[in-house]
Length: 484
Image (cartoon, rainbow, N blue to C red; front, side, top):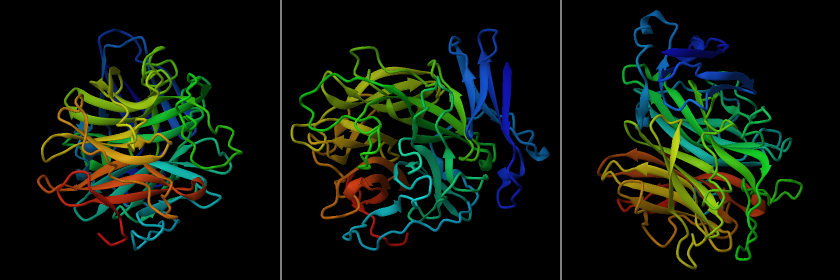
């Protein structure tokens, strides 16, 4: 068995965070079936380190062990880590930020109803556009902490998306940073595009999901975050001419109506990527089997996912059974669709095919579904999928579907969207999408929060929140600004 350690220089010690008092060290051990060096390249890119797996050696299994420099934790450091699907048991240190929390409205009927996070100041890294919220809730003995990873775009680099982190104590009022996070308790920009010319993520990156890797017997402060994200390159793909589409196909979708943005109305190739971190801020890219470093490639010509792979959302089903849901644009049907892939270790994936496509004629999702967020209900074990539906005119709403096993027989819970664009001149009056579900309580009385990206006048974006109503699945109302 071979292993490799990678570390970054530790941030200045801070008594409020146990992680910051020791170097950030991860140890990756590979169970090898062949005799070879499991890593063929290590390089630094911006704030991230790249760990490269040999793409020709496939019969490997990845295990993470959580190392510590403290003597009293040495015995725990070599225990094999495992995926956890319950995020509520990990407490985190309270981050600091000089940026005040984003404002929110006290009434859902006002133009700002539901808004919990606006785009940043003009000079900040997220001052032009934000979206793709990935929200996690952590409960400790004496505090509640929320983390939100999201993408942002600045006026200085209007064509490149980066990933940032905001924190909260209640999930409604958030602390953010205008610049890059500087320590293990800071907030702000945490991950930029890849710097290697051959990489799949040199143009833009957007977060899709975060999983927690830990052991039951390792302290929660040593948890390892696995970030699945969409990486965009400058390789432009050429979709077949379509006379049926009434809007311009884009990848990534450019919301801000800025005609100076030269990437507007173009389709760039995107692929799924993976990075890991011990603090949610300093990320190390894991190079997948594809030559660009992505986890896997688009489908071959004629396949439904031959244009691009976007928004990889990952669900832990059981030991050795991890599912990834992603979307693409099917050129045969001329509709967006969601597919699923399966993995035993979270790195090597096997595609299983398309699981859902377009809805009924005239429906909110007539042209298909994108940006799926899949969760498993504790009440009955069924899988729930919140997704962004695309109407015939390109309008965006949020729908929900259900499946018994998460692989097949997905059925919409209603022909109507569970959340539509607001009326009038609201901050999200032009469309809603990129849903992310967070379970709040209970097995029999499940309560959910739905975080989403909203689009307003002039393409201005924000992140909003809706709250489930009663026990009926799929009923949500926008947050009205009350305290929780």
